Length: 180
Picture (cartoon, rainbow, N blue to C red):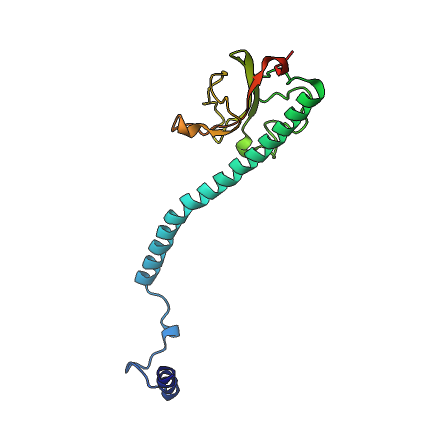
């Protein structure tokens, strides 16, 4: 409490700290102050930009995961109704009976990339999965049924550091539910 009383009494005394009587507002900024400010803004921008880009990438990949989850639910509904999964299609082609499959060149596709529905034969059954080609729009994930036998999301960065693909596997399926 004593500290605040001392501060208040110093403020009320209004004792000038320097002997100069010029006002700071009349002087303006010096070239050195402007230079230092510009350098600080540049440093802060260099630090903040990668974090901002990483946040935007997380948002876009989260959006892709939502789209892939929608496709997965429709594929499971199709299998429940028909008894089998639709045929394998080329990238950016809509599988039969799937409505929420988002094609390229729409404002809804993150990075204007592509999705691919896959139904690959594998050891007496098939592996059903959905791939998202990522930010670079190039497939780097494997195109066969040898991987992703367990259901779930796979980020292919674990296998290839340059890959930015995302895969949602419905897992290995018995031959009776593979395409007909």
